[in-house]
Length: 152
Length: 278
Image (cartoon, rainbow over all chains, first blue to last red; front, side, top):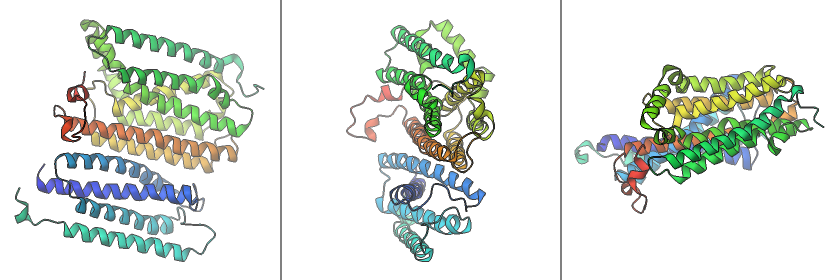
């Protein structure tokens, strides 16, 4: 595995893990622990049900596959935690933004919480997502190696 | 007390037949282990026995009794748990026990070649095609729960038997298509299998949420809520196990022949034993 392709795999592993982690946290914290989300919101669009199912399924796969990919890269000595972490922030932030804007608002799949004034919750949710994306982008750019320095 | 049992004793047939078949299957496996030309890993035997136990428990004994319980909610919940065990968990355990590899090692070589030929025939190849197996599985579930088929389970012993056999067989085919440790020359790529697994998992989850809001004919809303959540989370659990097994297979295949110590420096396992096919 060349330096460049393993760099890409490293980023992919991080992003996948971030997406899966965000999906998993969403499921456990908001659905289960806080019971803010509902299992099924009848106000949602039908296409939302399909998209929800696909993301849920993909999220599980992403967590598992990203960890095996991580193990693979670690074994080959290609692991750079800073870059991987950047990918995680990017993936998690992107998922959260997608969830906050498209799933919650556009598709009306479910809301963050019921019987409360949603604006503060929605704003916080999406702002946090944007911040995570920014942190991720910063880390990815910082850990980028120039072609000359890479060598192989 | 048994007003939910169909007439004609069809459910009783399943409840009686399953343990008998399980014992026969267990005995056959153990005999094959004795005749095997090479040492057989103990964990595979345990997987086989656990899988048989799970399958039998799903259709006979106290759990199956819950599926016929007097209170409707408990009945639908019991149904769901039984179907998860029979259609998802038991197949996973049984397939991971690598029975085909065992048969090939235990039979005399000419017979083993014959078995190999049969398993490579086009009907078997077709049925163990990931997309085909997924459609049989998930399509069967959609048919069962969104049509009148579900209520027919309780009135017709023949339908009840057929549905359970289908559920088990489809589960086996699906698991084989995705993660069988047995030799499969025509197996699809990891990417292909991953995509099918994700799609099937999604379809399973979508159905569960759909049933939450649209109960099967003859099931109350309350019962549907409970059963749908069992289907969703229980299905998730087994599917995640499937994902782990699939990814582990990918990982192992990349390092076939290499020492595992490379990734886990403190591992004491023998690489050859983990990586060899037979």
